[in-house]
Image (cartoon, rainbow, N blue to C red):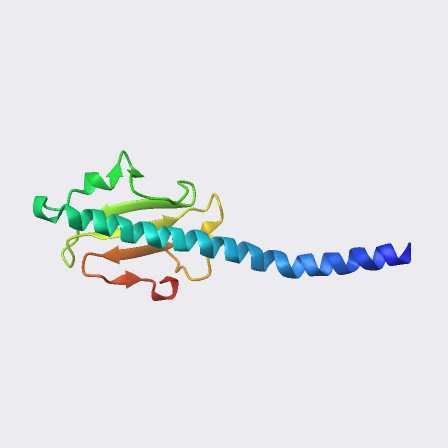
Length: 124
């Protein structure tokens, strides 16, 4: 009986150490997929450069048409700005705790501009 209790105690300690690392790895893997989606969206927008960047080719009814990310983990948007022809944003969602990713800043957003500028650098 004591051996069983010792085994359970060791298992509990290992689980308490391993689970947070596992969840962070899952978040990081989903972040990598989202970063790939940002790049895919940029490629699609550059294909439509001659027609003035067709945002509808990557975002339709508020959903990304070329993304592999799960829709409940990141929300994607494309916006125009004065400093760049477009900025593609991936906003981490709180429903799946993707927003707890350690590299994200307070706004929980990763972005890529038409100039190739990325934020936050830690995520890339």
